[in-house]
Length: 390
Image (tube, rainbow, N blue to C red; front, side, top):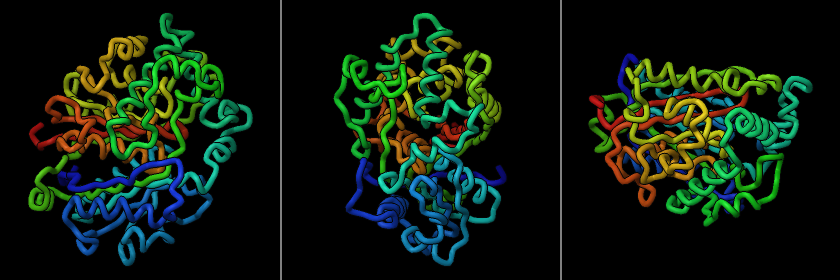
C-alpha cells in the first residue's frame, strides 16, 4: 500500500436478539461514540465515513443517508457498502484503501444490523436462481446442510459430535465476552439434542439473528503513532468471490468454497507466510455454522484437507490451545450481519492490544488473521500486526 494504515480506535454495542430500547440510529451511535472515545477523537477530526449494512434485511433503503446524523457523517464524504456477510470486512477494506491512497488521513468505518426489524431468512430465500441455486431455497441453512453432509460423506471419521464441539467452544468463549449475544453454558449432548433445522444442522449449530453495531477508526502512520498508544496495523488484505451452485457440492474437496483458499493463499503471498499456524497468534474467522469453522481450518492451511475435525477434537483451537480460533465466540454467538465481519477485525485488534478482557488468549499476540464469508461466496481476508516490524 502507498501508506501504512492502522486501527487506532474502535467500539461495539452490546448485542442481543432484541433492542427495543433504541432505533437504528441510536444503536449505531452507541458504537460510534465508543470508537471515538477509544481513539480520543471527535467527529470534527474524521475526514470520511464508510457505512456497511445489508439494508434489504431490514427493508430500509439508503441507510447511509437517513442515518447521517447518528453516524456523524453530515457534510462528510463517504461510501455505502453492501456485500452480504462480508459487509463489515469490505467496509474496513474500503476505509483502509482510502487512507492508504492518501485521499484521507482519518476515517470512520461502521457496520450494523438490526434484524428484529426485518426478515433476513425470507430475503435470503429469494436471492438465488430457482434451479441451480435451489439449495438456498430454505435460506442459508439449506446451503450449510449440504456443506455438512458433503464433508461427512467425504471424510470418514467426521461426525456430528465434531460439529457439536465447535458449538460448545464458541458459546463457552462467548460467556467470557461481555458484548456477545449467545452466552450459553452448553454441552455436546445439548447440541446433539437440539431441534433439527435442516438435517444434519441443528439449532445450536447455527448462528443467531443479532442486533448490534461495530465502529472502527483507521488512520495513516503519522496520525496513528501520534494519537494512539496501541495502534494495530493492517498489513495486508485480499478479496475473492464466486457463485456456488447445487452441483458444486458433489465433490467437497475439489469444488467447495475455493474462493476462501484462493484468498488465503494470496494474503499469505503478500505477507511472505508459509506456515500460517505458526505465523499468526490468533484467528477470528466468520463461521455462521459450526461446519464452516472446520472448513476454515483446512482452507487457511492450519491443517491438511480432511483433518479439520481432528483439530477441534484435540482442542487445538481453544483459547488455551496452540492455534486459538474465535476466542470472542465468533459469528456462532453474535451475528449482526452488517457488523459481523467488522467484529472479527475489531476482536482481533483487541487481542493484539491485549484489551480483550476475559477472552484474551493467554499468550503474547503480535499477529492475527481475520476472515469474512458472505453471499455469492464472497471472502475477505486480512492480516493485522502489533508493529510494522512484525
